[in-house]
Image (cartoon, rainbow, N blue to C red; front, side):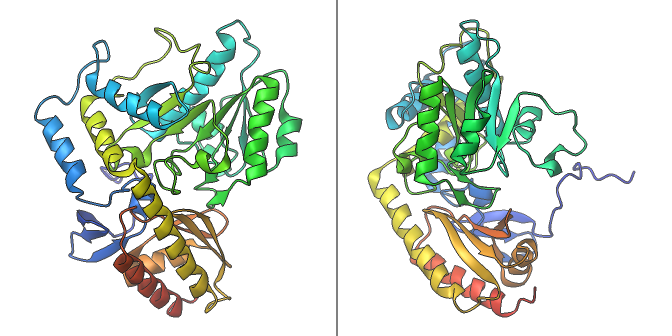
Length: 392
């Protein structure tokens, strides 16, 4: 047998973590890594957070799973907190970000088709976006690398350049059901939508009775310094997909919606066997206990400004390597003058620093939101050593 037991769809490196301590990962060979990747913006409380561990252990001792045919005190509790913290009136829990985005798209189409407008099905999305790996979510992206081997794609999507409001206007037609956007593109290179663009999308949606979906799977849950990134643009979506950080490492996602937007999501229209299970809800509530307060969010903003300042000052020493710093809060991207993947590998393999590459030659810097000054110091030391020893 030549195929590996784990289906070989990931180009796995030789870092093999078996343990985590706060902002560090320890490999099975004993190597210690500063984790400024956070499982790609998932481990927002770092590793081995006592509050998260305690909540999961306590819930596991009582009840891990029960069918959604029955009432869910645990799900009702987390849903109520999310409703109280956001624009939303109702929540559907999923197991992942892709499922949350799928739910968001179904909610948008159901909004129109609930009253017989079956011609309203098209979703406008943006180039270089990433919405997941299901058939619908890869169809929502224009990235050919995700399409290869899986054609034909699902119909019903139009792609527009990110931050191009005029392009969106031109794309709107009689079949348009919704606009779906990441306020901050993650895989696309930590590209922050301009305020005029995000506000303009809201205005276009209102003027054309279109559902505005925000995909905040990567940029949500305190990552940018507000609970959700939309708060920094002065607008609210109709529907929002969230995941990654909301479970702190436990698989959980959610689709949030207004009552109006969810008018088509009635009995029998959607479901999930594991979505909203008590164990996931305990993890989600523990995360909110830690991050959903003004003091924590202010600290994220403060640490983000500090880290960004250090990066911008550092970059001046290597103008041949680095171009700019992008992002919000502790969702930062360092754009390089050349391909970023080799540099990410160099930092990992030679300096014990974990980051993540992205499009547009960007190194994503996504530390746990609980970092201290000492972690920023360690990060800058490793980054500096990495830059000094790197040859593109």
